[in-house]
Length: 615
View 1 (cartoon, one colour):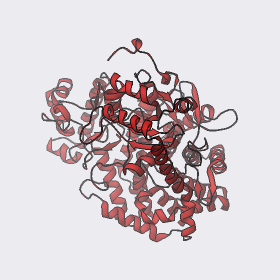
View 2 (spheres, one colour):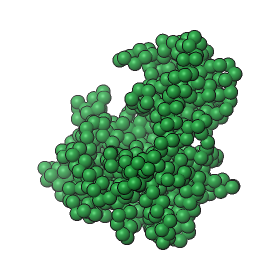
View 3 (cartoon, one colour):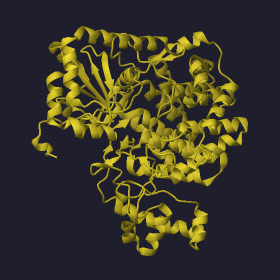
View 4 (spheres, one colour):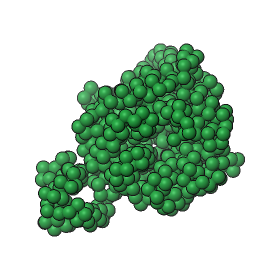
């Protein structure tokens, strides 16, 4: 690749987002999202080519290499469009709008998200990854871009009408909101909703490998937390067993980094073996929290070990010197996914010697044929430690000693490889989740170090991510805090402060939790059970961005808000706060009853509402 020093930078060079900076030397004349780009689009009557992704997204890298670094594609984009890049982690509001449009138009979504907009920001075509040339039924940019430009030039009125129809459909969807569902159904969900959710989880549970459904498999720890709390409520042992088996399978699988620790994004197979290798802070936080809940419920040492290992990874590799936590590590290094993590058996024996190397290869499933690409192997635990030790004539203690010594040697060697890129921006919401997990871990595992780390992160956010006028901000990087915080930032940060208070009995932490919850209420609560996602303003006039109760990779911010209202209401003896939590649950009752397994965090809030005292 041509040296960046010899290339001309585009407008992204002045941004802080690592994702945007990755594209700063593309020959595409990228704009960041903002008035400058759309003013030019209006003045020159050109459509906008909007590309949304994030720094650790594998297919975003693929599209960049194939197309955005390519002069032919860049020439087409620069000639016919105003190209705009957005980091979805900085601007989840924009991602939510245009992902909804993509799903409405195509029935699917994902990243990179590719959307064509009119100059007034209305979408008229959307897709995800697009190659340079047509492949496997997917349109190629070199053919597609001129076609879109031609349609825009010759049939502008039709395109604008289509964009208005799509936008109007999104407006209707937003204006209905959760409150509309509450008006249609005044019944607050109860015990039967929890039971039905458990039944559905039971029906989709993978009895052989743990988890739910087939490939790909996501850890979805919020589902496991619900099951553990449902076990506590109902005494249904199956609920706890499902959560425990899933956490153990994750801990033993390739989805867990057996050398450096930490959990990868998801498994592409149903056995938890081959992961998508990126590591996200929010996955570490929620999985550790689920493991702590499982350990507290069962006293089984394995989930406790999983939580400790995740915390080790986060504190070693994602903790900023000032106290906050970085966002993620990439899946790719040396231009390929997973290269940093995989091994050949001869590499292991060269480092450990033949006898010990063979033992380690057998333990972690490192074989001559490999279980990954190019004959390389992803490390996973092939069986039960007790059985493996007995087979080798070792005690379990001696096996653990050998494995730990070997892990350190292999880890030291691995750290000399080219490491995946680390996204070092600090996001308020994700830090709130990590604060909550560490605070809970300090109590459950009796580790003061975790409470200290959680407290440092909380203090960092108070110092660096609250503006002079008291407004919470979304992102910090390179000595700059920016972007007004979204509803989820307030919700997760309040969650973190609640857990800090419960771990430390420090009344100032309870006051902080109360403050950010009341600010969330002031800024985002539209009444009747609707929470607005953003206070930044509407990207498209008349199209509010409502917060969903449906869980994604992270538990829904709406549901965490409901949980916060209920728990804070009880801690502060404030019936009004409890009522606000009840309103959020009631407003989303229709969807909760229709798809309970997609609303695990809301189920947790409902469980909390139905029991007393709060657990």
